[in-house]
Length: 261
Image: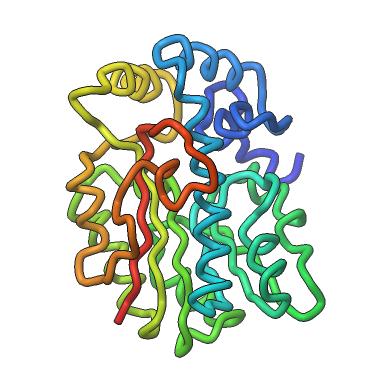
């Protein structure tokens, strides 16, 4: 057994693998599918969140590459490789785009080679690190990215794993403070809302049975991650409502894109 394999726990459901199951992937185990089905019973629409979040990623990256001229992306909390990964979307627009992926999930690391096949003109790299390891991430990212030039910081569905509010805001601020003017924050986060009690029930089930634990925040608390940044229209909204290409129902995953001046 390799060191990576020894770190993969198949006895408990894992967020990245359930996300993979909901989006039709094959990198999951029976325990993940069972938990995923149970969560879907509690909140039937929750499987759509994963798909909506993935589509938001594509629209945000495409906008930044096409309209904002961003050529560098730091994607933390990468998740398992899927269709239209960040480098694929970015390099379709700009073949010279550079992308650094960061995740601490051993299963993601085992599949990281799929994230490293980019265009000859561009460059991709992968870092095995935790979101909280800000200094490590920035030092390693600087080997591939020029941090004196704009970078898009991608934090999709990852700060939900930092329970303490001030710690999570501090991590995002430290990362953005290290990036050049013209950089962007792209962030999505599971929301809690009085009108969505079934979402709260699904998250409570997950936190009892799965790993890692999730933290929900209100729309206002999610908007606070963008303090000091210029929020792009339409602001912090359901990720399915951020510049959609077709009309789709709102989901309890909120997102936004902010520009650093």
